[in-house]
Image (cartoon, rainbow, N blue to C red; front, side, top):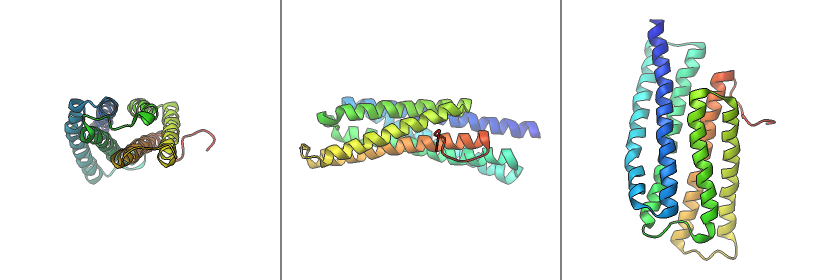
Length: 219
């Protein structure tokens, strides 16, 4: 009976990693679609989000079943509860990638990001992709150094998000109302994507150390 339970716990971890790989693929393609006005790629990201949602529903149902049937305690309970939380977080990361793709689709054939901010959003895209890749890595390896690197990328996303507001509020901003709305939304989507990556990193840190705290050194 214990072997079956341990196999189920292992499967939860495998499913979380599978979700994370789909999120990684989604945010990569969403950013490319955004920066290049690739309509087909944006449509693909939007359509593929249902697969992430389906994994979350299945994983959550199995977590509830394990809680009800196995009544886990101590470390096992932490694993199941953390899986529930992380599946929800990964699903939200997939939603944010979809939102970015939807902005790209709505703006087509125009590139949604104004030229003046193309460098900023290229950096945001690269940082978000690193967050996604490292989220997958931390789920599969439980490496706390990787968890810390996610926090650093989130700090960069926060700073870049602030840069978008500086640009929008500056005297040189001449974007039209739709561009202003798009930049505001996109900056928020990327900033929140980083925050959710940090949430996963902290959950993994909790599984490894038994404490739930900021993983950045010195905090």
